[in-house]
Amino acid sequence: LSYSKSILAKFLFSIFRIKICESLNIPIENSFAFGDEENDITMLKAAGHGIAMKNSNPKLFKICDEITKYDNNSDGLARFMLEQKFMH
Image (tube, rainbow, N blue to C red; front, top):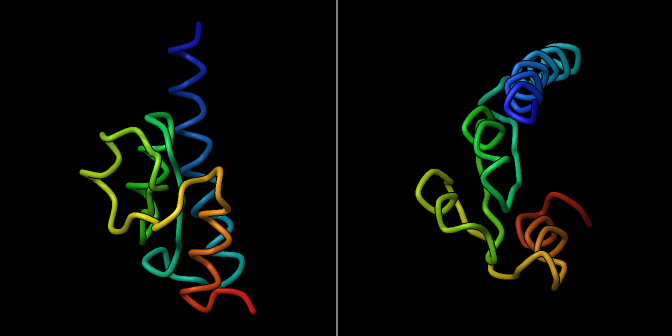
């Protein structure tokens, strides 16, 4: 049952990603995804830029474009976004 849920989640994410980007007129290559576990791999590969948290499962380091300097227990996502000027 959990395998079926995983397949369904991947399928739904792909549709969601495409629809959100289309509705906002954002090219897929300009999308970003952040993750830290194996269940995030599909999302990270689908995004224009896949970013792994510092404390991620090592498998993510091989497929991501970047790795944050800080882990998710140290506000790694927020710090990355501030450093990259995604938010002020």
